[in-house]
View 1 (cartoon, rainbow, N blue to C red):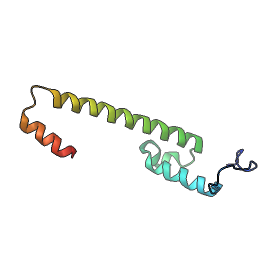
View 2 (cartoon, one colour):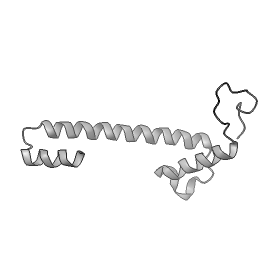
View 3 (cartoon, rainbow, N blue to C red):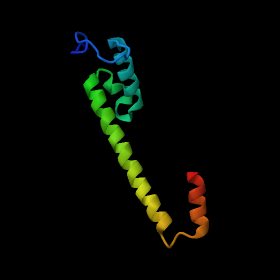
View 4 (cartoon, rainbow, N blue to C red):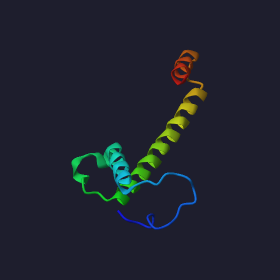
Length: 93
């Protein structure tokens, strides 16, 4: 997994990350992403794992936004009585 990292000097004082550490982190990411977790993708490239991770995070953010919008609509709805609103608010606190 060699790239342009090895030959250049670093201006920051951050410790250098090794290829083994990168491989370990990519493997951990692979275990977190449902689409990559099953055994079919054992030979998946690091770039594919990173791409799928980005897509997964984008989808999660979209779901959060959609749920936030739905919750705001529910709380603003005239049909939601005070007891229901109180229960929803208590769950959020």
